[in-house]
Length: 458
Image (cartoon, rainbow, N blue to C red; front, side, top):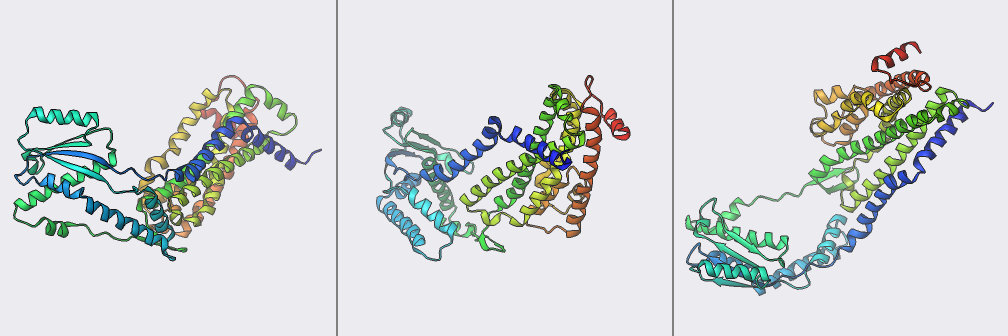
């Protein structure tokens, strides 16, 4: 007689092959990440052609002041000598960083990218000053020139633009991309604000110097040294950990549910039970689909590492949380997998399983609804209490451990881990009772009360 453990291994291997070796799984789980890897690692670096220099004319109808400050500001901004000097300065600065032997890798990569994107030559734009008294017919004719591409843009600045909250008009053609349009808008806005400041009797340069925000150099100190801080990444990384765990757990759990229902409805289950016991079958199925979930987590986790490295935020990834990610995957999967195996064995169709899964899914969505609050206050009363609710434990705890603002008391980590795996034992025990009764039962699907009765009396 074959060893019972080897029978479980056989069932697990069959379950893994039946799921992970199918075209649907390969396409849905492998092809998409591979495509993302290719895009990030190979395609994005190919977008290294320099930006196009802006060439053409801009018309300005400046009615704000007799001195036409907006037109003057645009003319100064596009002064040929100034643009050439600024272009050479930026190129020299980026080249200086690349020539530095001790330049930080992130700064070196940013300078290399900026150098590739810089236009080969500075902009060459002529600013046409249109008489402030130009009538509507003249303005319409200028609009037509913009539409034909003879003008890059037309600015109509009325006198009321000098009043706080005032508005003005910009007409752009197809040859002006959105970045250049924003650049022109900023120049005009600055000129209008400077005019307001001058009319109040102050020096615009002095006022701007006084109100300019200081620029801090934010650095994060980790066990690997200092790195550029990225507050957004520090906020998103814990969410990424939880998403990775959630996707791996529920994808494999869903596979377990559908394969169990499919085998039961096609009577394949009866053939399997002629060779193995219900407990061996359930254990093998859970382990096999668990390996599928682990495969998914490795694939998407590897994709996350590539993305983090590409965007220079690898130093913000809490690598000390990775072992906990694996541990919580085992905990979360066996909890959810037990529910899925029990539900799949008790029903005859996937539609019948939805009603039994509704309550479970509502509870499991709590981390999604409250993830931002948990990250911001990882030691709050809710975060602490929710960590001790077994279905939520792995997802809440990985959020708390992956954030770096507040340390989590070690006693909570140990206590929630022991409680979580205690719940795993209870869940597997209950699932085995339901599985033993429901796997060969057909007809009307059981109610939650019926499942409880099976657990008590099986």
